[in-house]
Amino acid sequence: MTAEDLNAFFWRVNGLRYYPQSAYFRREFGAPVRKISVDAHFSCPNIDGTVGYGGCIFCDARSFSPGRRFGIEDIDAQIDDGIVQLRRRFDVDRFIAYFQPSTNTHAPVETLERVYRVALRRPEIVGLAIGTRPDAVGEPVLTLLEKLAREKWLVLELGLQSSKDESLRFINRGHDYACFVDAVARAKRHGLRLGAHLILGLPGETREDNLLTARRVAAMRFHSVKLHNLYVVRRAPLADMWRAGKVAIPTLEEYARLAADFLEVLPPDTVVERLAGEATDDFLIAPEWTAKKHAARNAIDQELRRRGSWQGKFFDPDWRDEN
Ligand code: SF4
Image (cartoon, rainbow, N blue to C red; front, top):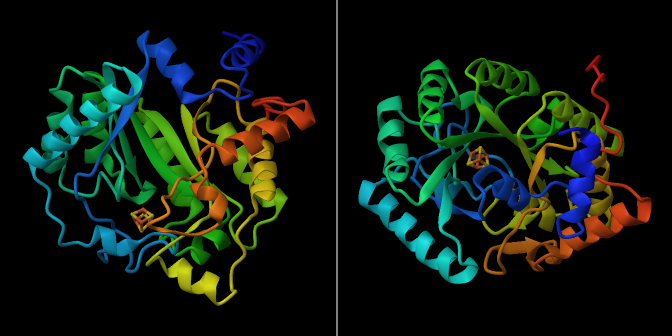
């Protein structure tokens, strides 16, 4: 399918101006698919001391303490529960098990395989999505994922957040951009389908910084991206910084402009899994609009319409990173 065909396709899919995950799933699986979030109770290298302590400043790191224990029965129960709830709400029969919280490759490969196979053995589960950090995908992990990807659909989702090293240091990410580039190159050698997680509008970043990250991500040709706004949750280090007036959080309008900029340079066939973060009132401190369902999606859609634009409008397949 050419870029032009895909653009025409976006316009037909609910009148959206970007390539939503729901449309991709329908094309890939011939039916709607929903993701079930699974917490396998892994810890995180940026919390347990493997690369650092305290975690990223926006993360409630105490939720992922090294003492957490996983249980096979627990994972099965989460999948059961997810299937019941999603069937009731959306009348779907196919699901992706999404190993989401914390770092889902941060364990010995034998443990990882045992955990992933709890999901893989279920007939309703048509694939796996595995969220992790670029510094937690060594060769044994990638070899395992390559093997599993031959059995079922699989995406490895790597957190980058920003390609600006200064920003990565500021958010206490514990890895730099070069680490991400290396992980992507190695994962590609294993033929893996890859996703990237980004935060748009980090403190101190300019529109040019945002565009550079977007162009870099575009050039790496990810299967999917997940865009997040920066939001403040209870118990995260960012909460104290925000209360002390040390960080500014983008407004809805500012975020919509950043997201529209990002989408414009993204390839038209990159799946957009998410346009903004979600947090419930119980945890969210700011910004208020994060708790409003569809607020970000509508604002980004409006911004793209105002510009007469869409995902991929300014994608340049010949762009080279000379920074
Ligand atoms: S956001 Fe992810 S990588 Fe960062 S500390 Fe939390 S679990 Fe670890």
